[in-house]
Structure formats: structure tokens, C-alpha cells
Image 1 (cartoon, chains in turn blue, brown):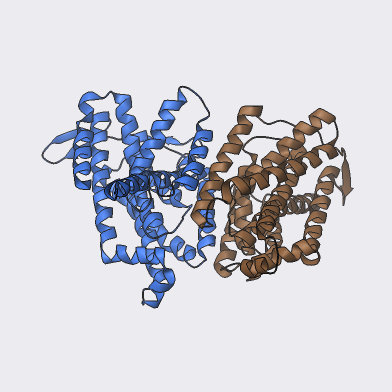
Image 2 (spheres, each protein chain N blue to C red):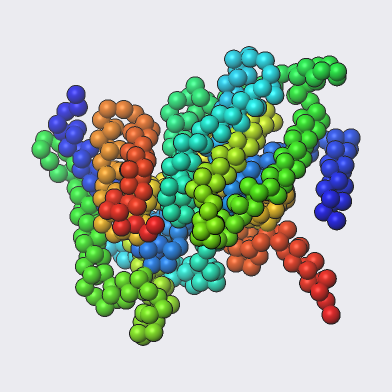
Length: 314
Length: 288
């Protein structure tokens, strides 16, 4: 059933450029990028049980690297994206080392401290991402072997590329959480004492989850810079760091795809409402409270629960 | 080299702001120490204090009325928040954090819709300046520092010497035994939350004449408060006061040498170093 949904969804998504206009494609592309960001976060939060409020550090860093590479007119979009992911992974090593040393409650706040510092750094040194106002990022053409020059500024092309990246990320992460590493993470999430008693190095595994998810977040951040053609200190803001938390919570944590769904729901809500009312944050806030109090497993969890009840009906 | 007057002013500003931050952070750490709840809406409660004070001052002309209204009003909202949002959830870190985050959005945006964007000014109840070693320092700020320090002192005494303080300490150590001994645990939770909210509201009311009233004004304070709460040790009263003062002193003295953004960065850097050196908090009595 799930694979069917995934295939149908991918086919439908890939058919979109034929029918949708430029703006709609842009919105969907943004959702896809945020979906990758949220999926990376789900690895950390949903599967390893680590509530980090510092994910924007890595997301922003990915964008920063891409912006710097392209501004220097160095060739290779793909190279800059990979470099962004690598940079994020590298930064996550020392930051993660600090963060996993403290209690789970302090972890939340220490990661928040990281993002506060990152935003201040971004604002203080404008050469990085152009400070608060930001700077433009222009995506040149990409020479794809066998196809020729592909214009990356074309919304349809961007859309397909990013959706492909999203599908690859989701599949990759789903594979990862099914490995022994993924199982170990889930054990640590559910019962850290038992995991330690069984001989797992809890701290090292948590650190690994932190770094892995940071790398994917850096990749997402790089894509964001390309899609929106803009980076700024706002990429390191509290709201950016809260986004994946909200998305995974609403969509369903511990599912990888839940974050994508959450990103879609929130973006859709924003698009629908911004023409009608500017009470958007109020509604998001109310929605978060409602979900946390009533539906802690998010939309996907609610669907799974409903299906279970249907199957078990007398 | 900065002049001695500039240094004096920086130190006094650091003390004033440090005590105010401590007021907000103490509420956070008390709530956390007792209930293991990270109240992300705490900054919004500070803002509500400022808004309420501003409205009361505009309506009555009395700053005391403004402060009183802020303290009572925000205490009530705090208790309401605890009952409506926190009580229904089991105390999982993620759940209460997210729920209070949602509450923050709701509170901030409701205020925005009610009073509009932009910063409102509140006239300082005590005008003029005092000569401190050759520098002119606003009298009102000294009043704020004095009030905040007095409240912190009173709070400490209250926790150590009153029956309610005993209940708080007992529930924190062992809620089940406390309940078995007749302590109304639920009421202690609600009252502590209300108390934390009230002092945050007080801080907001006191700061309103200095920084103005704006619906997002709580965010900055909240960020600093979170940081000093961990540095001080989650749940540690004296730790959070020391950490608050350390932060504001570093920042204010820093502005003598570098631009304000970088001074703040320096202060955060010092905080990070402290966390690395002492993950359990300054006095190593934080919840681990």
C-alpha cells in the first residue's frame, strides 16, 4: 500500500510541470526543499529522539556555501551542493560533541544557543550571506552529460531536479533507519538505559545521528539557496530552526515522509490564508497546540491509527 | 581606552539588565525544576506584562497601577496556560515545548492584532538622572535594578522560609511522597507556573519605559533567558542569577570595545564555553 502511494505520488508529482504554472511550480519546489529539510530532522528527532532547536545552523550553512561558491563563479552546482552538505557535516562534529554531553533537556537549549550564535555571526559579517538583507544567488546552466546544457533557472527543470532529490533523500533515509544503525537509534530513543545496558555507545550513536542529519540539512539548505535565489541571515533564524520541528510534528514524526507532508500542509495553509488574512502565525500556533494535545503522532499517525481501527472493527 | 564614566555606565547597565533577565530566567528555571517543562511562551508573558502595564498606565496615569495590573494579569494568564495547555499533556519534553511554542505564537499574534505593529512608548515614572562617579545614569534604571534585586531576594527567602516554598521543594524532590503527605501537588504546579509568569510580567512592566512595547519584544529576552538557564544549571536558582549577570556584564562591557552585535556574540561565546566546561551548570546542581 505504502509503495503504491509512493509510486503514484512520484508519478503525479513529476507530471506537474506539464499542467501547472510557474508560481505553482515554485511553491511545490519550495515544499520539496523544506521536505528534505524536515526529513533530515526526522532522522534526529523522530528516530533518535533528539529534539534539536539548532537545525537551521546546518541548513543555513548549506545555503551559505552554495552562495559563496556560485558568487565566486566556480563551476558545478552539484559540487557546491555536495560541498554544502560536507561543510554542514564537518561543523556538526564539534557542535554535536558539545550537545550530546548534556542532558536531554539541556540539549534542546544548547542547540538553540548554536542557532542564536549562527544568526549573530551571519548578521555581523555581511560577506557571508549578505547580513539581514541577504544576497542574490544566481543558478547558471548545468552541463548534464548526454543531455546538453540544462537551464537551472527554468522552473520546470528546477522542480523536477528537486523532486528527484527529495525522492532520493526519502528513500535513502528510509533505508538508513531500517539498518542496524537505525534500529539502534530507535532503541536509544525509546529506552536509553536499556540501550546502554546492552552495550550500545549511546553518546556516539547520538553524535552520529546528529552529524548525519546535519549533512542532509546542509544539502537542503543549498537547494533552498538555488530555488529561492537568495540567502540571508534569516536562514539561521529561530523561525527557520522551528520549521522542521513543526513540519515533522504535524505530519508525523518517525516516518521520514511525515515531514514532507507537514511542510506541504503548512505551506499550503500559508498560501491559502495570506490572501485572506494575516492571522497566519496565530493559526499555526493554534494548530500546533491542537496537534500536540490531541494528535501527538501527527497526520500520518492519525491515518495509521484510523486504518488500524478499521482493520480491527468487529 | 574607554573613559571611566563609560565603564561605570556599562557596569550599571549590565547590572540593571542582568537583574531583569534574571527575573525572567528564574521563572523559567523554577518551572523547569519543578515540572520539567520548558516554557517557550515565557518571553511572550514578559511582553504581556509590558503591554498590560502600558495599557494600564495610559488608562490611569499611574505606573504603580500598571505594574500591579501586569503582575496580576500575567499571573492569571500563566495559570490559565498551565491548566489549558500543559496539564493535558504528559510531561514529555517535546510535547510541552511545542505546545508552549504554539501558545507563544498565539499570544504574540493576538497582541499584534489587538494593538498593531510598531513600538509603543510608556513614560518613565521617575525622570531624570543620577550622577554616578561623573557619569549621568537614568534614575529609573536604578529603580528597576533595585526592584528586580529585591524581588529576587524576596523570592529566595520565600522558597527557603515559607510553607509554600517547602511544598515547592518537596514536590520537586518527590511528587508522590509529597502528595501522600498531603501537599496539593496540582495546586503547587499551577501556583508555581503563575508565580513564574508573574515575575516575567513584572520584568516586562519594569522594562516598558526603557525599551518600549512591541509584540515581539519577548523573543530576545527569551533567547537570553534560555541560555542563562542552562549555563546556570536547569533548576538552579543561584546559578541562573549568576549566569544572567555574567551574560549581561560581558555584553555591556563588550560594547565598550566592539559593535553591539559582536558584543552579544562574545557573550554567547562565553556562555558556550561555560556549558562546555560545566555541563551541569555553574554550581553543578542542574538537572542532568
